[in-house]
Structure formats: structure tokens, C-alpha cells
Image (tube, rainbow, N blue to C red; front, side):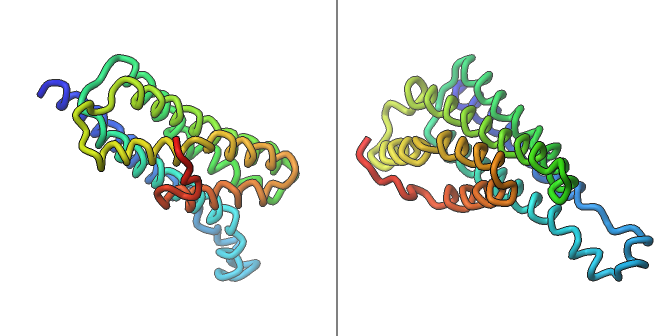
Length: 206
């Protein structure tokens, strides 16, 4: 029972971090100033904020998917070790940082510094994919429920298939940020939506 309570505490703490990070994203979308509205009109001023909308949507979708997949993992765990705390903490560290590169991207996507902003933005998602991979590798090797019924075992195999290629794909998005900033952001958004679908598209034997 103590082991189960500890895993519940880990997930509860993680849920709070996810909730705070995802809430902070909307703060970065600023209301147009009166000067902008006077010059352009409210509709045009709002439309000019499209980089903020794009960054917000991409970050929101990514955090939401991470939260869902994080829960998916912890359903399969009923015990813990110290490594689980630290690896989970590493993932949460990167999640809490997401609002900063989101704000950076929204601010500079249309300017000369867009490449640096997109490098940092996609690099953060690359770091998250590596930390998530490390967390799952540890859980799958050391902490899975031994008495798992077949559906749970299938879930474990599905998660492994699901994330086998994630670091490589996000590395591709990071590399693309040196070539085309909008395309690299589009890749991150596409990956978030695709990873929201369980099991896509690598249904290969483990």
C-alpha cells in the first residue's frame, strides 16, 4: 500500500506542475495596445498576434499530450525507486520551462532573431522527448507491474512502440529550425497531434 501511495503522490505532484505550466501559456498572449488598435483596428491587431496563437497552440497541445502519456505510464506502475523521482523530476523541469521559449517564439517569429527563438523552442521539445524516453526506459525495465494482466502488458508494448522514434523525430524538428522556422514549428504541432493517437504509426513487433 505504501508503494502505491508513493506513486500516487508522484503523479499528483506531476499533475499540479502540468496544470501550472499549461495555464501560464495563455499569459503570454498580450492584449493589443490602444495605439495598435488605433492604427490598425482591433481585428487587424488581433490577427497580427498569430505567432502568439501558433506558439500557444503548439505548446498547449504538446503539454496536454505529455500529461496524458504520463498518466498512461503511471497506470502501469505500482512501486517506485529513487531513480523514478529524479527521472520524473527531469521531465517536469523541462515542462516548467516551456512557457519561456513559447513567449520567445511568439515575440520573435516575425523578426531576424526567429531562428534562435525556434532553435530554443524545438530544442526544448527535443529535451522533453529524451527525458520522457529515459523515464519510460527505467519504468519498463524496473517498475512495471509484474502481475500485469494481458491488456496491461499490451499497453506497455504499445508505449514502447509509441515512443521508440520520438527523440529522432524531434531531432528532425530541431534540425529543421535551422532551415525553416515555420516548418519546424509545424512539425512540432503535427507530432503533438500524431502522438495523441495511441500506437501511430509504428505498429512493429518489439
